[in-house]
Image (cartoon, rainbow, N blue to C red; front, side):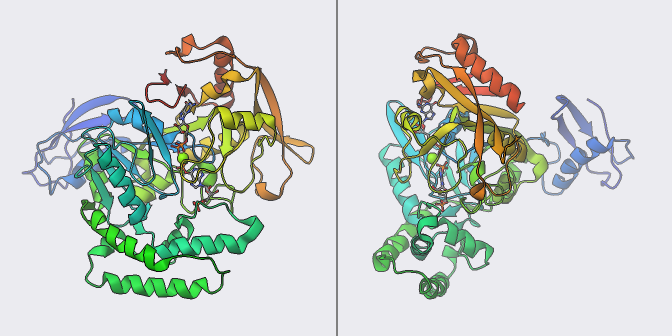
Length: 488
Ligand code: GDP
Ligand code: IMO
Ligand code: MG
């Protein structure tokens, strides 16, 4: 503890706050009295947080000003097992917040002999007392949302007051779904393979500055705003091939579902999150999709329409970059993708089929079979880089139990040259993955509870990947159930 004073503060203001330096793990107390202080630049930045809070807050309470927000996101093309890991870790947090995407996501949780699939609701909802926030970066379809909430009610989950929605989240209209279907029909063979939940058209309206937001449903002229946007959509639909769509039915369901949405607390999530951090609350940001589906850094145009990467946490919740703490990147022990687009390590053969059957690789949202292949290390190096991943969680390692030999791509061979970086245009480049093979362990991992109890072959595989990727593998998932997780 050391006393510090800052010029510019009123003499009458006395502050006693907790001063936490994240990296150095130093905790001290600061006292201001009005005189000049000598503070190192790093300290000063931190101190500014205290100063900012002074006018409106009880000046004598303790404020842990370096509280950070942790992030969980997918490092591949989605479906890495984010839901399971968020649900497991949620116990250590006060708030779980979704920051992007919409009902294109399907996050599966398994516990107590039951399986739950969440699309819009954050995966912390099953943990009692935990707040779940749908951030401004999310696009929300009130009909899908209502269905999901009914399901939770039937499972006895009390979510009222624990499930908050940002006023700035954008609404998916029925005509957004119609446009999604028409746009995909127009693309024909080169279609994206969208989940057809209206994601692309809704984000287009957001960036095109035409969208409707959750907060708008409280406006007196909301119906007028809706009709104006719908009219635009109907005009736009004329340029696409005809796709059948029951607009009247979809509209009736949509308006009726708004009542359920209205029954939840709306928040200005940027204030909510920052206040919670200032109050020392522990927050976990839950990603949807995966980094290779990111609108900027994914396999464009075969991507989704949001920033699925760590940067998306800042824009999708309203937190500053220096507030980001741990970044837990999730990867399967192999690789899958659903929908169109490049997939360098895809196995369009009996090995791929075996991975699909063993891993039950069928979409949680659409039921489509997922494309399967070996784990792709150049791809992971890329997404680790872009996300600032601090630790890896590897899921579905048990799916490899049956293989006598497994493999990982260490490089790409393009035009005879070996490289470990991703080319600009994965879509139009012939990539031959250079594979390193590993001996399989060929036994069940059901009884394994620690890293040391893993068979030698599995430890060798994990250690080798860890060295290649330069990031520790801190968690290893050995089954879909909540408790099937090795934490190192
Ligand atoms: P998310 O979208 O990233 O949450 O992942 P999904 O829920 O779409 O897909 C992951 C699937 O794998 C789900 O069916 C999970 O129940 C299942 N799963 C998660 N972890 C494991 C694991 O370690 N082993 C096995 N066999 N299945 C897992
Ligand atoms: P979670 O959160 C896997 C894929 C679609 C399609 C592309 C664009 O469960 O990991 P969109 O509906 O966004 O227009 O589809 O992205 N996709 C996903 N693939 N997991 C997801 O979410 C996905 N969300 C979208 O299959 O190729
Ligand atoms: Mg999924």
